[in-house]
Image 1 (cartoon, helix red, strand yellow):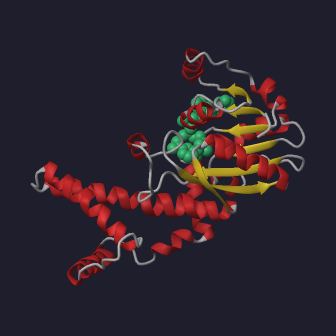
Image 2 (tube, rainbow, N blue to C red):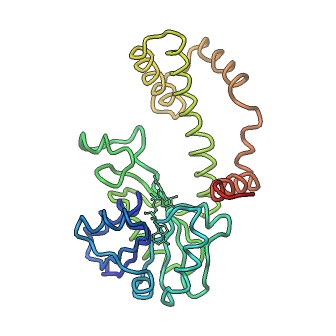
Length: 282
Ligand SMILES: NC(=O)c1ccc[n+]([C@@H]2O[C@H](COP(=O)([O-])OP(=O)(O)OC[C@H]3O[C@@H](n4cnc5c(N)ncnc54)[C@H](O)[C@@H]3O)[C@@H](O)[C@H]2O)c1
């Protein structure tokens, strides 16, 4: 991989710190930009230098926008006009790009990526990797990558940087920004994360109704794994007839029959709009 100059905007945030740690292992010239005082102090404590966007961005081949999605419109309006022609911006979530809240330029490229995170039934080599649930430290994971605007050459360069940011990466799945928004928020957050929260709420309800907490947690986490192994085809065993009836009760009582509409483009756009503008006055 050729040596690049890479700016990380928001280098002191959660993702900024993760990707900076990984990119520092590569032979690139890294320019770190951060505006929050506490985050700047954290970076300096690690011996890192913080640059101004006005200096870093025009010098960079790649600009990574590791800022909150709700700030992306304002930050990209400031940063993108400073990029050098043919530079590539990388975004770490599809939300702002999907809802047209990223400042674009015809002479630059824009690539969106997201980690898949290490899979539940994936093989990991070490105990540390098995506890690296987020990925990007020890655990192998896939990533998804989309070319939002720009050239194939820039896409290839950006995909390599994305692999380095989330290393160790097994596969980079190329998809579109629209497909990425179906994966997140629609599939992974609206559906899967709310189902995970429902499971925790069900556990708490059992405990509140008198089941000893340790027994309830042990039972829940075991019974979370086995239906997932069955429905995702990890094991051939079917559900029992009685379990199928209980699941039908759940489908009728817990899940709305029109839940698939959360994947409709207008609903995804509305969900993302709520995510990006939740703190704003109406
Ligand atoms: N946190 C996660 O688990 C996660 C996972 C995957 C993708 N992402 C994506 O990563 C991106 C960043 O999310 P995060 O969770 O790291 O956010 P964060 O709030 O933890 O960090 C954002 C950082 O950006 C800084 N910042 C804001 N505006 C700035 C500006 N104008 N100049 C310089 N710095 C600025 C903030 O001070 C903060 O340190 C988002 O697109 C998010 O969707 C996050």
